[in-house]
Image (cartoon, rainbow, N blue to C red):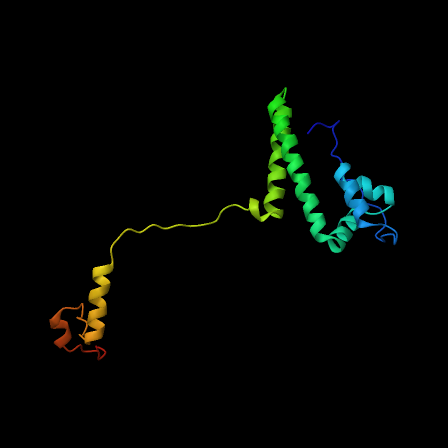
Length: 164
């Protein structure tokens, strides 16, 4: 990084954590649909952005989620428009990242956009004959044949330790 370029510090969120009694969640949600950020809305009410978002999630969780979904769909459309008309590589990259971020948000918020995680195994082998024979053996009480050599079954194994 060059010396004349400095990293930007994150914007301080210094507003109040106390939500005014007369603040209506529906008014805030309506403004959120028309304005760009929760930071702008929170600063106009003298609130911390984090406090505003937490309050909305607690008071109107379903409506908050629906508005988040709506905004994500709008961001995808904006990003797709940006992809179509990007005049340079930077604009193209910005539009692509905008679409990816909106897709990620949709996957997190809406079950219709969750990645498919099904596993289908197709096995065409016919086990019918083997299963029928196994069932007949169990029903008739037929002993199961040992899979060891007959000479091992009749021999004795000496397990006394060697005293040398």
